[in-house]
Each structure stands twice: as structure tokens, then as C-alpha cells.
Image (tube, rainbow, N blue to C red):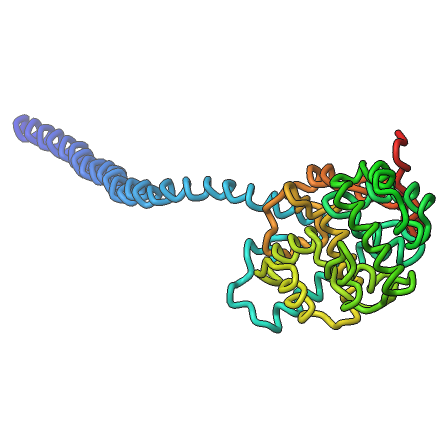
Amino acid sequence: MKKTAASKKSAAADRASTTEEGPATEKAPAAKKSAAAKKAPAKKAPAKKAPAKKAPAKKAPAKKAAPLKRQAPAKKPAVVPKKATAAVKGVAPAKTVAPKPPRGESRTALVRRARRINRELAEVYPYAHPELDFENPFQLVVATVLSAQTTDLRVNQTTPALFAKYPTPEDLAAAVPEEVEEILRPTGFFRAKTKSVIGLSKALTEDFGGEVPGRLEDLVKLPGVGRKTAFVVLGNAFGRPGITVDTHFQRLVRRWRWTEETDPDKIEAAVGALFPKSDWTDLSHHVIWHGRRICHARKPACGACPVAPLCPAYGEGETDPEKAKKLLKYEKGGFPGQRLKPPQAYLDAGGKPAPPLGAG
């Protein structure tokens, strides 16, 4: 019986041990499973990180593309000049100013462009006029002959003394050459010019009764008078249309590609065909004024030019507006004009008369 009780106790002990160990052994796998479950995401995490590792590979092109984005600011300098030049007239040169017009520009397009340039210049120089001082056709024809190879300003400073001493063709025809030479010396080539003005005065006295003729064919017969001088006289003393092809006119119409001709007579014909005859005289004034004030031979002030959007030669001169303003001459630059006695319209517009010879 004791053994049975002992065996019962041992059996109870064995059961107790199995019941204690059983849950422990069952919990262990559960813990292992939970640990495995926790580790499973850790193992899967690298799988998820794999795309993350690939992400940099995808970002690699973005990094390569980054330099392209950095190059974008390099385009900004190209915009700045456009804004700067646009201040000249409120028009962005990028849209309207081209280095050269198409060589295939049609005749119609050329005529439209040429006439638009003339209209623009008419707005800028509404007071444009002949810049030689004169009171009658005789004074104008003499002054125009003297203006060769010198400025109108120098002629205007010289002719007051000449006309004070020789007011009529008859007076100048009878003048002593040496005395006339002394007066004309400041104009340059004074001996040849003296011969011309005395000769044309004699022709006027002998052939035209002391009056300047109003026909081209008669004017060109006078000593020292060519087509340019004749058209100046016809247009400004007689009101008959004519194109004055001087050095400024030749330079500008070629820059604007109105013509490729170099001979003055051919330039006159080519340009005249682009405009109505009634526009010829004022057209000459507009072009010559622009050539003297803005579109200079050596340093054209492109940045201050009102017709820059229409000019094929834009960029040959200074394009910076502030620097270009410093190149302007006469009233555009705040300096006196070329006439001692300019028209009232010019004075009303802010123009200043030129000083007499020897002043200042």
C-alpha cells in the first residue's frame, strides 16, 4: 500500500511535471513563431528596401537631369539685352529686329517697309527742313554749292559775310576772286568753290536775267551745280519734288536695303520708285536728318534709333540705350543745330540755333 501511495505520488509528480512542461514546450514554439513573425517583416524589409535601393538608381537620371536644370539660368542673359533695348521704343527687338531681312523680300514688302520707315522718321522729325540758311533761291543755290566737302553749319557761319557783300548774282559775278576766296576759306576747297559761285553768278546774269531757273535741265547747266544741288533748290526754293542723294542719304538707304546701287543717279531712281513723287522732298529731309543725328557713318546709335525694328543693319553700332544716347548729335543730344536762323517750328520743338562764325 505504501508503494502504491508512493507510486501514486510519483505519478502525480510526473503528471505535474508534464502539465508544467507541456505548456512550456507549447509556448516555446509560439514564441519562436512570434519571433519568426517579427523577424519575417525584418526579412521582408530588405525585399521592400530593394526598391529603395533601386530608387537611387531611378534618381540617378534625375541627378543627371539636374545639370540641365542648372543650365537654365544660362538662358537668362539672352533675355536681359532684349529688355534693355526694348526701352528704346517699347518694342522687344527679339520680335522685330532681325540681323538681315530675307534676301527674297518681295517688292511689295520692300515698299511697305520703306514707307513705314519714312512715317516713323516723320514722327521723330516733324520739323525737318533744309539745314542751309537762305532767304531766296540765289542764296540757296550758292550755299548748296559751298556745302560740298564740309558741314552745313560751316557754310551757314560763312555765307552771312558773303551775302552781305554780294547780295545779288550781278554783284557776285563782278567780284574780285581773291576777296571771295578769303571769305570762303573756312569752307575748304575755297579756290574751286570761288570759281564755281562766281561762274554760276555770271551764268545767271547772262543767261537767265539774274534769276535762278526753276527747271532741272537749266539748273544742271550752271557751274558747280549737279542733280543733287538742283533737287535741293527745286524742292526747297520752288516746292517741286526731288530726292537729294547726299552722303547721308546714300549710306542710310543702303543700310536699310532699299537699294544696292552705288551711283547717285541710280540710287535716286531706285528710291524714287518706292515712294509717291509728292513725298520725295520730305523723305530727303527725314533721311538726311536721321543720318546726321543718329545713324552716323562710324558709330551709329542703334540703341537710340526709332526705326531699329525695321533696320536690317541693326547691331552695326552701339545697341546699349544709355551708351547710344551719348552718341546723339545736334538737338537730339542737346546741342545746337546747324542753322543760325532755323524755322520757328524747329525752335518751338526745342531746337537751338547754331552760333555765328568765331563764337565760343
